[in-house]
Each structure stands twice: as C-alpha cells, then as structure tokens.
Length: 205
Image 1 (spheres, rainbow, N blue to C red):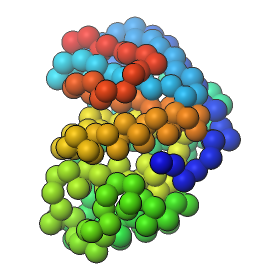
Image 2: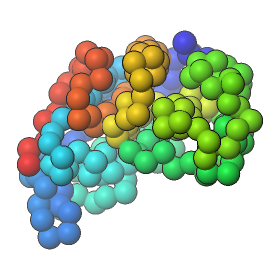
Image 3: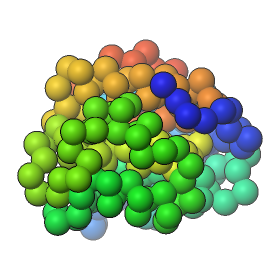
Image 4: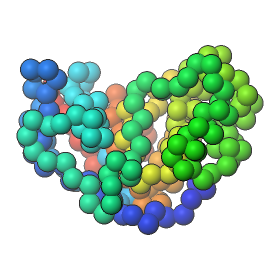
C-alpha cells in the first residue's frame, strides 16, 4: 500500500502541560501526552472542546498560553509534518492531476501519479476539475498529499469526513502503512476511525 520505505527520522512528540485558548476563553489546561515513532494518537472530545486547536498547536499555527510542545528526532518540525485540516483546501478549477503535480513539486514528492490515483481510486477523474468531484472524491484527493510527499508526522482533522466505507478502509490502510514506516499519526475525530490507537487523548470541554 506504500511506495516508501521506513522513515530515516524517528520522531517523538512531547506535549507537556499545555493550556490553549480561543480568544479569551480557555479551552483546556494542563494537557500532557507523548507519542513515539509508529504511534497512532486519537484525539476525542465534543464539538468546540479544542480538538482542532490542539492540532493547530502541534502544527505550529497556534501558540499555547502555557506549557511546551516538542518534536524530538527531526531536524525541522515544520518540514517533518503534514497538517490536513477539516477543509480540503483544493482549487475548484484545477484538475486532480494538477493538484498531484503541484504537491509533488512543492513538497519534493516521489510517488508516481498513477500509484496515488490507484491507491485512492482517483484514476477515472484525474483530468477533471475539483468542482465536479463528489465530496468523497475531493476528500480522497486531499488525503493524496500525504502520499505524494511523505512526512513522518501526520496531523489529521476529521480525516474520514465525507468518505464512504471503502474510503474509510483506504484511510485506515494508509495509517497502518504510515505507522509501519515509523511515522506518527494524530487524528482529531468525532467518531473512532476503527484503527486501534496507541493512545487516546480526551480533550475536555
């Protein structure tokens, strides 16, 4: 299922007593956890509890009010991760193939377009613009950037959104392959993905 070998970097994520806020409202305080190479961390919590904010903090897009987030085992955390937000962040008029080529160039990707298309069942829509894709196809395309340019840390916000059962199965296989290569996946979910987590982080509201 994977076009890559094991990652040379073996990352570890350390979250130590962080406090996050949205505006003036504190979302949570004193949250700590650690994840080593090969881990799958499932972040659970109610809507508005701070799951997305936690991912944004891990991605370096949100500064904690207190505490520390550290990535050990990688030279540059910013270059070692993919943050896949709840929104797909696709260009409506660009084709599936255009997106794959753009990501490959931007992130120095290696896997072939055909390999990615076959893995995510996008072969029939490679030349179509995003605006005509179904929501499930658009989500599969968004997931493709994880494969086009492998990074050891995946931060996934509701990655199964809009996916059918077949798409969820592919996502689970992607996570399993990523872990087997030594990567870490951290996913904020409304419902469990069906992957057995190494750690469950519950974000209180």
